[in-house]
Amino acid sequence: MAGQKAQWARNEPEGDGASEVEEAAVATAGPPVHGRSTRQRAAVAAALDEVDEFRSAQELHDMLKHRGDSVGLTTVYRTLQSLADAGEVDVLRTTEGEAVYRRCNSEEHHHHLVCRACGKAVEVEGPAVEKWADAIAAEHGFVDVAHTIEIFGTCGDCAAAKTSQG
Figure 1 (cartoon, rainbow, N blue to C red):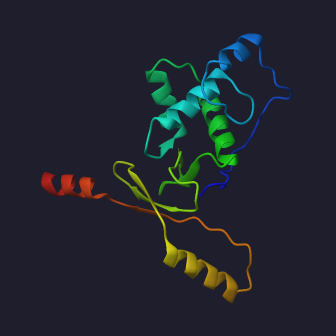
Figure 2 (cartoon, rainbow, N blue to C red; figure 1 turned 90 degrees about the vertical axis):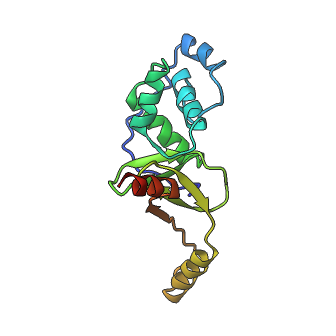
């Protein structure tokens, strides 16, 4: 999914508007984030580095609040959009339609198995899917095709926990 772009409305102000205080804070704020670098954007990027599961913007915002980072929800959304546009995070939609984000271990094309209960995500390669997609595209005269596949289910741990509960 690297390179896949999420579709969010953008309302970026004209000019960079960064204060000298913000720019000084960025110098020690961690890895750069595409777009205007601020301490808040660096905090969002760092939070993504700390989680293995896909997380929504709201979940990341809550995580940042609980650890004392003052980052607005709009900044979280804009930062996630910037990272997605740069191909630095994978974006997928849950079965409820919510966009969720994660830094993946692989920069190569891959797919995901995602647990509906706990959010655990596993990166998987799908050679059979790749062959099928190429064959279908060729059959219909398409070239330069791309695809994303996410499979949602219940992981073994959650299935076992549900079975033991009742």
